[in-house]
Image (tube, rainbow, N blue to C red; front, side):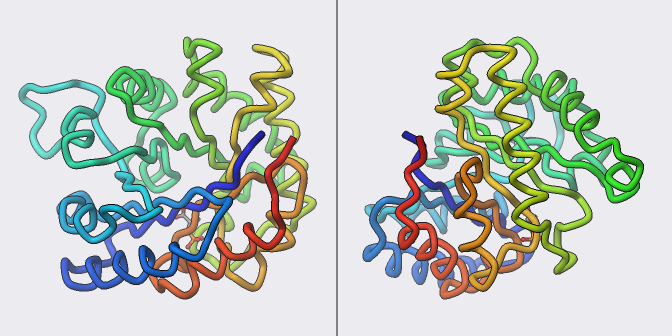
Length: 258
Ligand code: PEP
């Protein structure tokens, strides 16, 4: 069964004080929510503060990025074991901002995925096409290339345990949400790629989140689709009531899938 998973990506949008207050609000509201997994991913300098604020709650801690080397002369970077030390369970990898602003390639994201798994972190691997790629009818070619590259060499058990976030780049932070049909089409095709590469039972265990302008108002129709197992939320995760509102939709739908 795939339990719904809602994660908040706070990006570079909090101070220490607002991060702590937001984390406390999410942790408090999460008490009333059963049947959904929740995580918040603050800026890395506030992981410890947020970890303290959510300690003992139903909310897990995630990082927004990491480097694949465990230690060494890599100025400005953090390794997987460091994130584990800070209490992280998840790490977002290959977010579109990492791919398109910082030039991360599938090859690099793949190295990071292997390193995260080896250290006991669960990667949330982001994939998604640009608007021009969608308009050129290349969505699935791009998605397949990203799956093949970013997830290369993962064992069947590893694939079943990771999370994929399908985030059409044109829908991130733009207010332009993919229609539930557009999202479901990619999610089910993605699951089929995993089935063809591994097998049906692994494909059925894999959680695939949708990301791109998800809000409490549009969450239910997305989460209700058979292959959408949760959401990776940017803007709406910066207000506890909005983030919790999305999680409540998942709970109300009772969507443990397959
Ligand atoms: C994201 O950054 O992963 C994201 C989906 O952002 P937003 O919800 O703001 O579109």
